[in-house]
Length: 303
Image: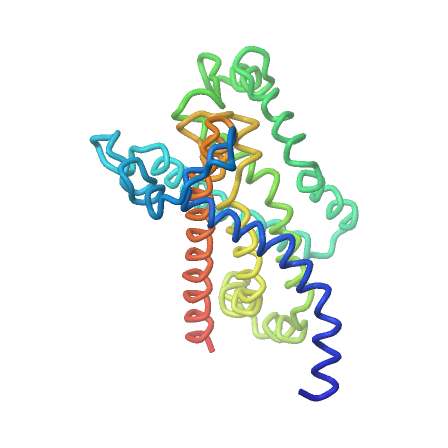
């Protein structure tokens, strides 16, 4: 090992030690607890139970309490809810963020003010925006119901965050409102780096704007778009605060993180909750690997 390599490791050592303390150690403890019957009331009495929390009689992936199958168990429902929320919200945020970024990339008077204003929803803390939307969506005194009644869009007040057919999609709408500016910001940064000469040549040749977008702009910003999507996907798969504030422990909206919190904090089952937390970690890791692999394949085909 030469001096430059030793110097590099020396500079990296504080970061590696910090990561070990704040990430690797808690993760390792969580995985260990997932193989025990630890209870929050008496952690010292925890016993090793092997795979019982995962595949045992009352485990995550072998729960006999629901005759209709795994997907009707609380854990199965939390997986379905999280995947629905993630796929729909990230897709909408990407599409809307792309549209907003394309608009903000144009030259117009007051563009700097509009760029700053667009970021306001993203700058508001999630808890604050969730409480604000919770008040506006209230079924008795919420302004959303009043406006929709006045416009004739509904004929009675709706409990948007309580009724199962509306709750999850209401949360998705709030998340799209809040996080679209984040996607727009990342995509706009990519658009700002594109070479201008190819666009000038396209205008001279009379290329249709839609064809120019599909054949030039989209391929050039695809790497940045992939990064933006993976950031949002990771965030969406571990969503907790927005859903919990708006709908609490509603089974029609509970996420995987919400399920972990309920089992650990409300029920006190640290071992079972740790197993759910470990499973959540593995699901997020698998989703990331699959997305990155598909993204690389697409980039290779384009190349």
